[in-house]
Length: 217
Image (cartoon, rainbow, N blue to C red; front, side, top):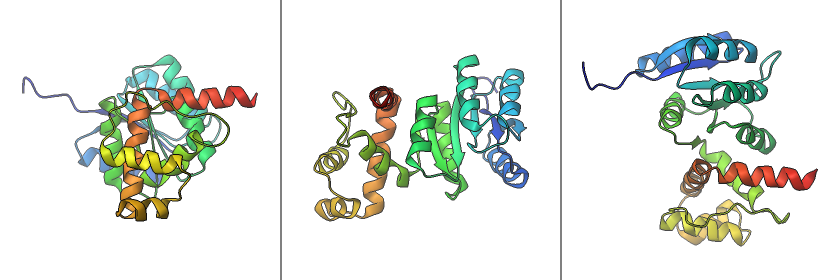
């Protein structure tokens, strides 16, 4: 029907066939069109060349060309395509490397499939999505004692987000922030994920990570 948006077109890249096929079925059931499945980074890159998807759901640990390198190559060749990382790794270095490579979001495989679908839709809309338990460690990495601090000037945070940032600046732990704000730890982490998404949308997270890497060299 005229006026209806076209379905999102997605490539699913993961070297575990059962997981990959199951995710593809779930995405299809949600109204997303899975245009290709790829068992490796090289296959993901070839699928992007052949299908021009809106989003690639990219595992990091794949044989041959890694998901990280594939992300770099996909975005170099097809900058209009968005990459959402979906992986088991919650390591800060992996998250930081994925963002620096250009990924627009990072979701853990142990999260409900609805979160993956939300991440895909956010990616296609030009937004960012991060699993909530990842946000606080990464924000702390960006505000550590090295002198690197992400620029938050002019970003439209709401009051709870500003409160979380203020508590982070004082070096408080997650549970201390929750007590100070009178909310649960899950709520604190959800606010942190929203902060990270807003900063990433303006490329400020990537800029801060690049500055940090430059100082380490």
